Image (cartoon, rainbow, N blue to C red; front, side, top):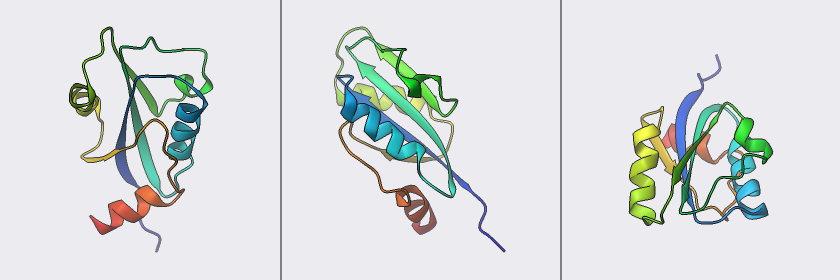
Length: 107
């Protein structure tokens, strides 16, 4: 019998939009055996809605007009999270495809 998929909300606060952010988000979307909800918090930077990931149903966008800092970004992300399990990812980090599944199993 296979394990049921778990849900994890991943909060990514960012002050920039570039290829590193694109790769970070894609690495979370590529995670296996877990249902993901990604909350990208644009802190003082206007979202670029032309990026492919902005149309993905697993991605939510939060926009702060002014830079409020990482703590406010996490609070905004937590307010929008769909799942009880929360992960954080920096906007220039890459996640392994099994990270969330391994961490949620451990928890």
